[in-house]
Image 1: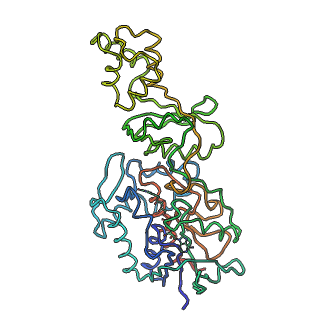
Image 2: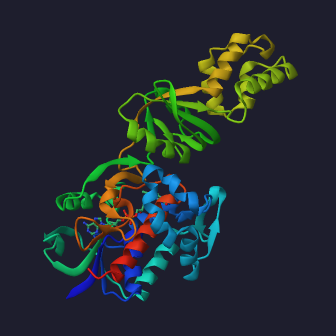
Image 3: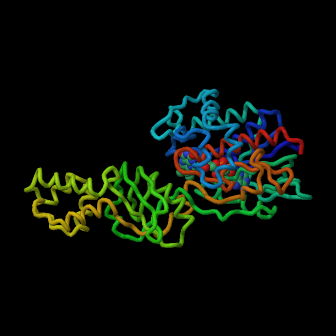
Length: 414
Ligand SMILES: Cc1cc2nc3c(=O)[nH]c(=O)nc-3n(C[C@H](O)[C@H](O)[C@H](O)COP(=O)(O)OP(=O)(O)OC[C@H]3O[C@@H](n4cnc5c(N)ncnc54)[C@H](O)[C@@H]3O)c2cc1C
């Protein structure tokens, strides 16, 4: 049998692309190497699936994706943030918006999103073939002729959509298979790097803060003593570095700058300037002037942080606060407002939520997601050289590009 369209990869981008193409009455087969669809989708948002983000007006949404974001203009104008919400709501999934615009199913279950997409595939008449790992694409005269599966079976279609994702969390099935195929077809692959990954630092001292979670800190990334970016938000110390949304977002920039030397400057008191914090400390000291410095810090900071700051400050823990010298106070403020750690690296693909890099965007038509090199090939999702910060922005790429690819593949005449 020859299908109109074969979609490779049953993740969010592939399911959306196949569903949309089927909805437009094409005969579609969706090939997935795993024995289930959407394995990575089920892990998203800690199992809650942060489907998109409403914090930014759609006009400026592309900016969040950095210099490559403008590629998404057209796809976002088709299925943007509110259309994604409508898509799921219209199919019975109740949706809620949490802090910082993050959108989730009310049930807090990624499985409800997956179930909805599976229903979309059934309703659109898509044939889903699980345990169907694609081995290679056979190309003749700039057209894909057929697909060969690892079991030797051949799949024939008029057009093909590749949605096999990147290289992050390879155990979920996205092991970077698509890069080799596309390179062979003449596409340029912008070097894939782990992004949204924990940061590993050189300072062994962080081990003493392991598990400490902070809701409102500011971290500046410095190279050659110059601030590259500053981010504020939630952060968690790990045994060898930093994780949590703020750190994951910084890791995107760090990945690009490695192996250059970089520092992370943590401000534990971002709502106070240095002088405001000094005034506060002085006022506290005056108010309770007989208190031991150790007890003062214990009240000011969480136990793990206070123990470490106490050690690093070199101030005698038993010293009464009214005897703490000006220099000692300055040292304390320095530690609270400029706690420096040196970047070693980011964690690898096994811990990176997304892959930055991928198929070079100038070789893809942003209006249709069609390859400019191969006549009957379309691409969508994380395989493209596009990635965003945490908060639902990466799934938004998949919904928008998948929907657009499915729509244009079903309506084009090639
Ligand atoms: C832990 C974690 C949490 C995340 N949380 C969020 C979140 O809350 N919000 C958000 O926006 N983003 C989140 N992301 C990112 C998001 O999951 C990805 O951006 C998204 O899954 C990419 O979708 P995709 O369809 O392009 O690729 P994938 O989801 O990677 O799907 C690709 C599919 O192709 C299949 N495949 C691969 N090779 C072959 C082959 N040779 N033959 C057949 N099939 C093949 C794979 O098995 C897989 O099912 C998270 C990622 C992780 C790892």
